[in-house]
Length: 61
Image 1 (cartoon, rainbow, N blue to C red):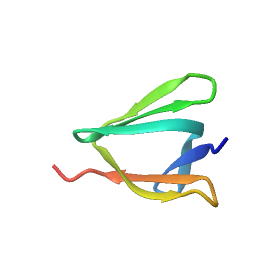
Image 2 (image 1 turned 45 degrees about the vertical axis):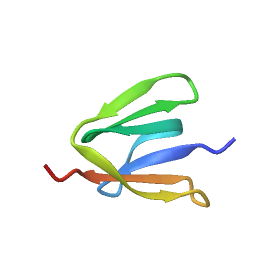
Image 3 (image 1 turned 180 degrees about the horizontal axis):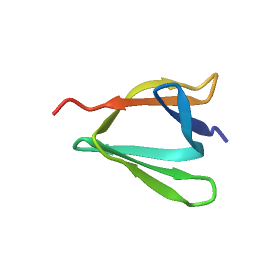
Image 4 (image 1 turned 60 degrees about the vertical axis):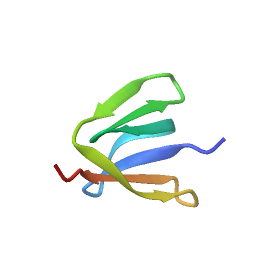
């Protein structure tokens, strides 16, 4: 299975993510343990499968 680490400003903020969804200006994510996090006012700017990176940046309002 392919897991991602969520990166914001070069810092890993959530590990082993298997699900991510954007909704308006938010990103919700779930890891392999079923823990969820909501990243408000964020958007997905990069997905790199080879390095397991999912990069978020501030959403434009």
